[in-house]
Image (cartoon, rainbow, N blue to C red; front, side, top):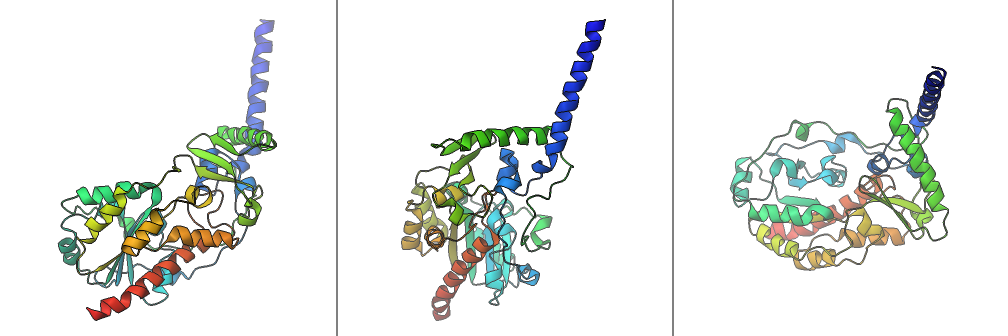
Length: 338
């Protein structure tokens, strides 16, 4: 009986200690970025600290299909209508749809599009590198449009945060999340002290890599170390994607297609020698976003991709928008000659 009582007290103390540590560290497990959330690492170490530009919310308004000059079909890099503000600022009326709704550039795309009332001049087709081979392949294989409406397509969008408090945590999460974040932080501190530290594979498809000149390129506290998605591949983009662009361009007679391929974060910082963007530019005039981003890094642009996330910063989006604006303006004279 005496031993059972002591055991119960011991278990109670252990649970109390676990809870106290988890509760104490819980504010550290308030995540702003996808990668810090997936890796369970605190924003105090990996959250960006340099202020970003403030956007005019009116430039993010969605145009109706019938009035749009430009139709954008894209993924999460286009869904929030941030880079599009560079176009709307110049007077273009832009409508943005996602691949989830459109499903592809099918064989009957143009009759379907005209049936929706689109009489604009341009269509921008955006895809992140990791998905572009699949996106293009599905479009080529698609015979008939099957549009899936989404209530969020026309919902208002709001400017992204100019800044956030990396210390501004709360106690709304699970104790276990706080405790696991504490353990991951201890493990990071241990590993990062090694003189030959260069790479760490974390749970949930996250890799941490030490980046050359990291503190000139990032604003987070541990600026030499950056989080990436583990499944972003170092190899070249499959050549089938280039051939599929030609097949899809042939389906879009009467409008000007502009392809927008966003490099993976890993490609920009770790595998910058890929040639796909050069070939897409040479063969189809696609804006070379990889070259643009490499030049930005050469100029020591800070937080092009924040360390804690998979998407570009507001500054990065605006640079992308400038490239797309140039592409539209370059295509305007040929449109006027038709």
